Length: 81
Image (cartoon, rainbow, N blue to C red; front, side, top):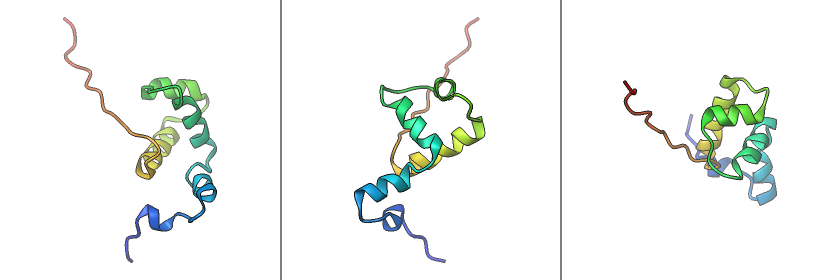
């Protein structure tokens, strides 16, 4: 089977493309909560409400692959003694 990029799968109509990318209930809530600015995973999970960690992680990964969100890893640094 041939690999097809996301752009080739998306509809030509911008409205239809938008609906395709954010058609899931959780994606709309994620975007709503990220509009004001960057949030850590725990903050986002708490602000959204009753979403499991597994579902939130999967939705964020899909959104990252689609180019809707960017992820930045933050190192915690050494523990204080």
